[in-house]
Image 1 (tube, rainbow, N blue to C red):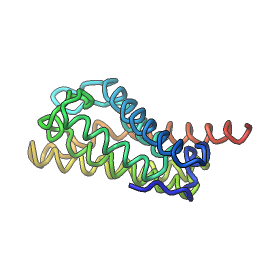
Image 2 (spheres, helix red, strand yellow):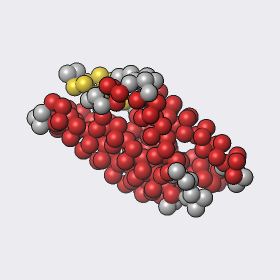
Image 3 (tube, rainbow, N blue to C red):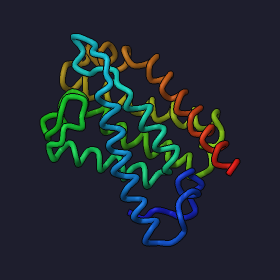
Length: 194
């Protein structure tokens, strides 16, 4: 996957221009970002009997995507999914293919799409504006909730799609999208002072 130098993301502006160093930094950022998402997934509030807890993952994903830009953010999410599929305990419920395609599968796929949406917005300079970034984050939130609900419907029946797949997450996801939309523009303002 090529990482564009025309990106207006925070990371693309902060990294050195020398190619070898830049690609080494990309690799480091993918690993660091996937670890941050894994840690955020362990900060959870169970919603019994719902098999999917509330976590801080979308906050981490939106922040990473807004800072990294689309390609680097999507690469980070793909690395995260690959780590989990390989058996590393990075998912909320552990690791392995069974946990990859378990109750959270729809949300995991949605995470990749959401990272692409927010990262695309960052590539166009939206990460400097809290309102524009919030709009992108909310579009990503919608995708995550829809895909998560659809997967819940497949696993547990259509009556659980809204009750388990969307309802418990609406307020917290709006809060997390809003926090990420405030955080990255604040980082831009610090970057501009240097």
